[in-house]
Image (cartoon, rainbow, N blue to C red):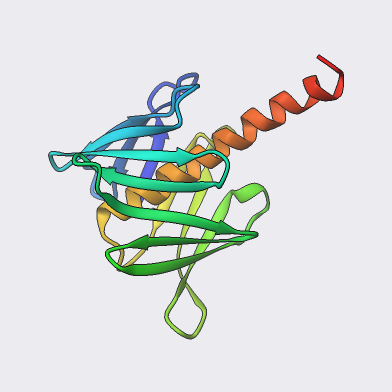
Length: 161
C-alpha cells in the first residue's frame, strides 16, 4: 500500500511512503502546472495532463509513454505494460476509485483521497507495479486539484466577475 500526504499542509508538496515506512519519492502539484515530475529508483518521470481530453500520461526521462489513463463517465482505465486496468468511481466527487479485477468484475483494489480536507491519498493496488501505483495516486490528486480550481472559478463567472 502507498500513502501520499502533504509535507506542509498549505503547500502542494507531497511525500510518498510505503507501508514499511520507506519514502521512495516526493512530488509537487504547484498551481499553473499541467502535471508534475518525480524521481523513482533513479528514473525521472513526468506526469502530463491533456486539459481538454482529461487524459493523463506518464512519460519516462526519454519521453516514452509508460502509462496512460482515459476517462469515460464514471470509469477510468489505466494502460501500462500493455495491460489495461479498469477503475470504477465508487464515491462522489472522485474521492475513491475501485480497481476491477479479472473477468468476474469483483473489486481488486482501491485508490482514495483521505485525511483532513482530503490532503492525503492511499493506493492499495495488489498486483500492480510501484511506478503505475504512483501514477494512479498522482492522477487522483491532480484531478482533485482540477476540480477545486474549477469550483473556485465558477462563482466568479456566474457573478459576471
